[in-house]
Length: 485
Image 1: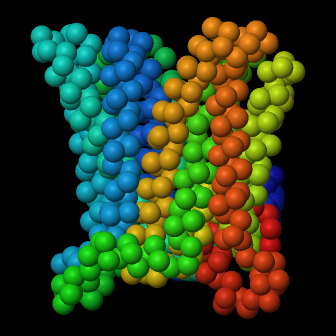
Image 2 (image 1 turned 180 degrees about the horizontal axis):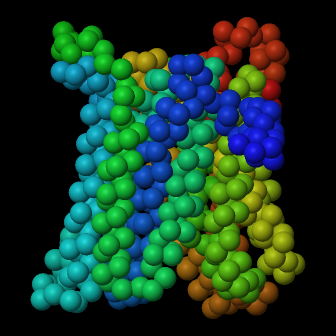
């Protein structure tokens, strides 16, 4: 290595974990190489989300002329599986395997579901494209089945993958480990969006089928690599329990600890508050602020960057003993400011204020997600960690899906009524529908603050607590946002 190269490498090494993102997530129990390999399951989840909601959504409506209501129904099918995350997590907690594994079998079968959905999709696309003599309804039914299988697979893989990561990571490192996993999800979505865009730049049905087949292969390869030699075999898990644990009994015990129900309600409210804008920000920037396509496309990157910054700050504060509920509450407060900026950008006709609001939405969402996830597993034992993560995932995924659907209805109805003059001539504009949605999001985030307030620990308790007492709190704040300590 020549002199300049050696100096550059030495400079990066000298930065240490203080400045390199997530460098301090590695521990002797879970080295960085093994941790990065485990995080590959989040990359495949992000890739599946982009392919379903982004690429296939647009292609089926525009290029294949599938009615939009049918596509909307297909996209909603994975939502049917989201509430079952808690049951899946519970089953993995109490799974008995001949090989002594709890998590690996569920991640493997989730991967098979993802692969199976992607394997069916090309045949559905062939029928929908009109290149075959098969009935169109068969292609639509096959596409719906493919969406359902991929959705069920990614819900299973993500829930049990997070449970496996928290099993392997020591308590002191869990906030940073979960932050890294969330960042890998964002990275998988961003990279997949760029790759799919480049591959489909010259669109054809055959090229689209090749992209879907490639996604299936990449999913299988990356998930197998993520699983390889991760979960240790435990001989105690090979014997059947003398008294099987029922899900309803386990749920009653889990939900009765502390204020678990309030925490899940706050998670659902906050997730809905941050998610309603998912399908509206780009149209808002283009139709209302008259921003060019290149600028509105960059919004996804701004959201991702803001989310990554929120995850980093949350991980640092939680690792220092911050209350995860306080972090989550701060994230919700940032969201209120963010949506106020987005609303004001229209009457002020300023793109920079809109961009600031978009970045703050990602930042607040990262803080909130990290804090609520950590808080959800703070009191979980190894025997019910999957149930805790499944409950958090179910609340988040269900709230996100329903809120996105609701936002479209509110926007369309609000804009139609405004243009008809129902609200008066002063607001007879398409911007009224968008403003109503953003106002509802502010109300939901304020309700989140009300719900999460009683969960926040007083600062005096945090100062007087011993490190051993703070460890569960740190572990429980992985997905909330906040800077309080």
